[in-house]
Length: 90
Image (cartoon, rainbow, N blue to C red):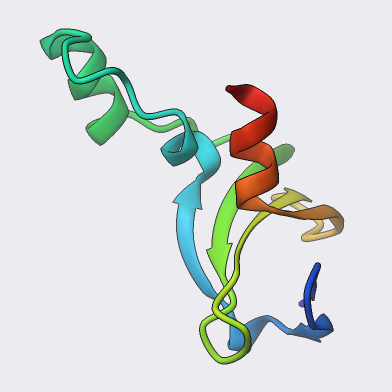
């Protein structure tokens, strides 16, 4: 699988570190309550289809990116800097 780093361009997937579902960018407020924090830490969907994942370009520029991909075909639909996704959701 090939991923396109928004900073460095297209690279082999082995240059990147997979972190998990991009829900990590939507951390609850510190006083959100026990249930919100339990869901954030422990519960993840495992869809067969399109998902958004958080990756780090570990062997490159160290950028954090959000990869939209299809989990069955592994087709990469989009890659964007995580800071831009975070800023857009704020």
